[in-house]
Length: 113
Length: 114
Image 1 (cartoon, rainbow over the protein chains, first blue to last red):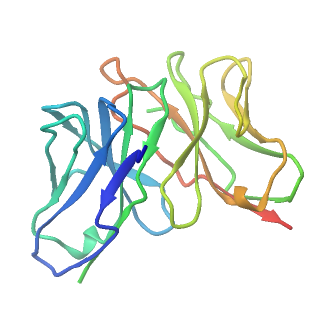
Image 2 (tube, rainbow over the protein chains, first blue to last red):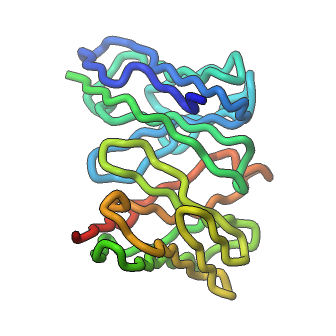
Image 3 (tube, rainbow over the protein chains, first blue to last red):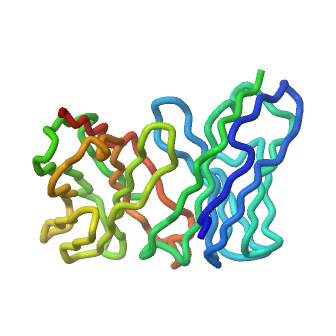
């Protein structure tokens, strides 16, 4: 059972480039989330989804887009990368809302230069 | 959203119990109390959660005050592997489902001395 899988693990982007961070879960969870973590800080929610075809903004959505075409996949798209998007990105999933545990991926470390 | 207050850091000795406190004086009646931990260079890992009653699992115990304005995560016998940042989080409903995820603060950096 793989849990939540994120790819790639590391990436260096040039300013203005675009990329997609992939996230897949094999637990049939309805809820999925994207977070970013800056050095020495807690995680901040970027976007979340409560099921296929449904997404909503979190605390820091600017500069990002998401889609949820299947239950398993929740890709995060960065358009026109900026140095401020240098961070570690974590994807998470949970079966339902506040009374269930969330499972996190191992993260993608992104550097924008 | 209701916020939590945790000490920035705590130290403990290996093989001793650890009590990690968390204050959440503005908690509402439907907020669940969650604890996660993050080991260096890893994603957060679920530890335990509860609503009103104390909870136990294989990793830890969660003691919740009667007024729910504070809670304590108890690691019964700390090991070096328990050195991590521990986050106390209130998972609140928005639109009824709590789907907006977990709001992370800075957490408590737990240092375990051998």
